[in-house]
Image (cartoon, one colour):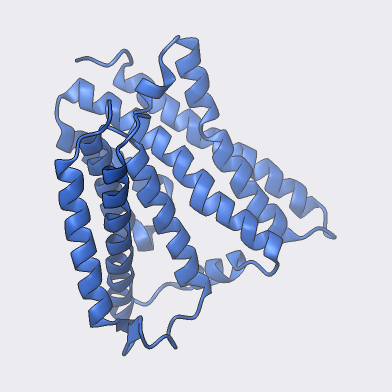
Length: 265
């Protein structure tokens, strides 16, 4: 089945959506920087929310102007309760395994200074800042990015190329590139491949959205909460073996379940 959109049009919409996000977020940040008496972190977090929200405006406008069924074109299909449970199981396991992978990488290649500085810059110092950052990172960013990449773009590539693997890999590559973070490029790419697979397999973008949101929420927790003193989770600077075993069990059964359960279409 062919897509009603060309690959060039799909690339154009993705580019326009990303540009809209940068412009909208940049304008909000510029307003904050122009006022020395304002809270810079407040405007930084607000710029994330506004920017990520604007990401899907060109996409929705494009689909509406072409009189396309938005839910269908964005793969917004309902999923069963079983699929949701398996997605949460997979997410919990992947999050823990990703954390251990980060720890192993950092033991050989310490995080560059700009990563350390960025974590300090984004650390909220008020409850409002924490709420705004959580909304931006764990809710709005996953919604915008999953609708744009796994919902729209990957689906167009799947139908044009008739090659799901190629479509998933290309979408994950573009997804990784727009984050503009060379240090975490490999991890983001692997996550993008997994998100693409479960969106395709479940015939819905919702499982990918759940995994993406949970991953970002836990990334905030790992960045801002000192887990090194937690003897249950951490063992000699790494994720404890018993937590790793749980993560493997949870990932395996979550992945296996998603492979076997069909979406409610």
